[in-house]
Amino acid sequence: MPSPTVLADEGVKAVAAGRYEEGIEKLSEALKERPAPLWLLERSKAYLRTNDFDLALYDAEKALRVAFDRANRDLMTEAQLRRAIALFRLGRYADADICAAWVTKLVDGSRATVDDGQQNKVDENGDYTESVASITEEVKPDARDRLATAMTGNGGRSKGVSLKNQAISWRLQALTKLEQLPVGHAGRKVNISEKYPQPAAAPPARKAKKDAEPTDGDGAGDSKREEDDTSRASGSTRDAWERLWKQYRVVHAKNSVRTSFYQNDATLTIDFFAKNVPADRFALQADFENLTIGPIPAIHPDTIRVHLWGRIKPAETKQTIKSMKVELVLQKETLGKWPTLQRDSVDLLDNISVGTASQPSFPQFSAFIARTRYKAPEELDLPDFSRDQNLWYGALLDKLQAGLGEQSSPLASAGLSASPNPATEATLVAPDQERATPGKDDHVRASNPVPLSTPSSGGAGPASAPAYPTSSKKGPVNWDKFDAGGDVDEDESQNDVNKFFQKLYEGADEDTKRAMMKSYVESNGTSLSTSWAEAKDKTYKTQPPDGAEAKRWDE
Image (tube, rainbow, N blue to C red; front, side, top):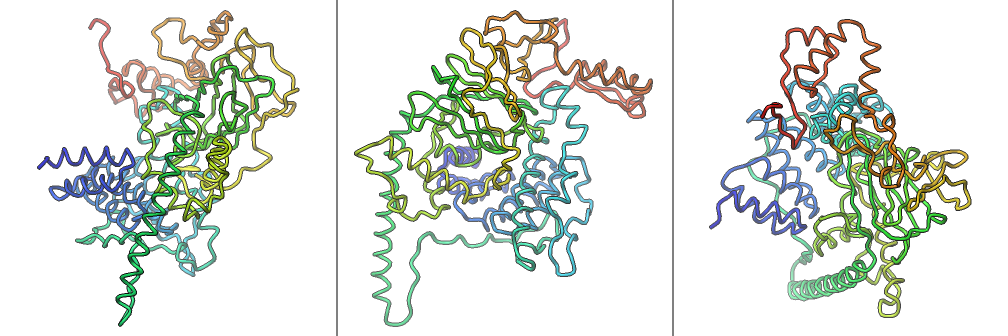
């Protein structure tokens, strides 16, 4: 018999691969030995994917309690977020917002046991009173996050900032749903009273999947036959979905575009590796949560849709068309690293292939379909696959992508599912607009008369693209500009962060300057304080970014 650690490791990998039942089984065996919070959180995630929301909530609350008893703040934060997500899936939007609010306060350093009264914000009818408007200022990134991001690129607090961003996203989504409910609805009521509840000794019973309802009295024989018929019908439907999935994967492989992305807390850069994209006809449509680009040669349909994990500032989107790829630079609406490029389940129905990401599986596809209105493939009303595979594929993509609107996602997703405001939607569609002078291989779109999306110019890569690490005394080089054949201007290659600190230092009083110098020098450039009262008695240690190691120059 494998050890609990081995079983748990196999269970976590199974969940990541979309084999949720296998993951649940292995994690359950491991959890019989000890209630490890990480294992409980992984099983909670698997239960969410199989629509067992009560069990997902139970595991999240049990992980939260164990983490609290062990005084593990990081795990408390993750478990509280998982609890908020489970409550959201159960339609308990007021409770979900309360838990997500507690997550943000944990990340901000509040005492774990402080009673902030969040659960007491109810009116005379017992309805929760928080709204999207009431938390607008609260969810804005604070000065510490902006300064940390400017210093290190990931703020040195990347995980905490990411969890806070996810919690904010779920708050916005929960409150949006809550405001759509009538007064007195159960989703508006507050049912939780404890931050760290003591879960019941036994979890709720798991609901049987696709069981037929029994009948009373002499109908037992008929009931058995009905169960058999239901079982055969269910198996037949599953086989039909599996055939459709296999056909879909065959055509998808022929029409997918290799894609990569990299990011810092403020920006996201996406590369679509497609040759000979027609710059004169290329169009980008961007709203807060989605992108559509095209035409892309040699694929069908000839557009690419990206359903982003988080929200962006569409008016600040930049594009560069090169001979071998299309590059987009997006500005994030909220600072923080995204765990992935797109929201949950989108890799099932897009036409891009992102890096080394594992291929989606039929169980993932089946779970996605179960959350849509389609009960059988016939309901999709698709063209004949044997006559025109591309037409069939395009119609299927349209139907499934429309299904995203029927499901909730983290900011879209991990946020909001509301339609974008047409006045703020960034669209580049006019082929006859004025164009900047391109380099040999680059075609860069110039601004619209009313600029909603500001592209790069002169054949260079985007000026705000993340800089690569460098030890050069001259600072980082914009390699996209170098590739275009232009000479690199040293002034333009100066790190914007240095300019930020210069401006901050120049406008500071003497005590602030002393605090900045002391903290920056003692920490070898990894910390910065503007409070002399804090800095004068504190010794700052070197805190390298995640993945880096601090060494002396003579080592």
